[in-house]
Length: 134
Ligand code: HEM
Image (cartoon, rainbow, N blue to C red; front, side, top):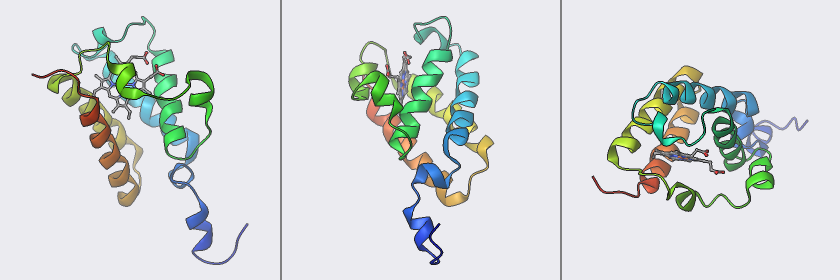
């Protein structure tokens, strides 16, 4: 453990700062509870069981923020825009997706600077996933 003030925090990844795997699993679990009850989003998910989709999103976010690289070990390069191409991601789907993410993020009770950094990324990423006008 590095005892010089300041250094320990700087050496931590964002993933570690927000609480690691447990935090990302809570975020994504709550998000998928919203998706499961959403009349627009639920039919978009090809699998009957949302569990595997929940696992993929959790592993992706953990990897993105500096956690283990398990997502790519299983799925290869993320190529997220390409992976969303089979789905109609229009403004309505974008808005619904972000609404459930907002709710999930609020449920975590993160420090304001962590919460706003995560939200900035999620809104940016969601906008970049839109592939259908309207
Ligand atoms: C904007 C609205 C979005 C919609 C409607 C949407 C919808 C979907 C759907 C239907 C799937 C397929 C379920 C599955 O097989 O996993 C999926 C997969 C996935 N989405 Fe999204 N998504 C959106 C935005 C995002 C964003 C912003 C991210 C990242 C921050 C993301 C990350 C992922 C990941 C990691 C997968 C699994 C990819 C794989 O390994 O196959 N999605 N999404």
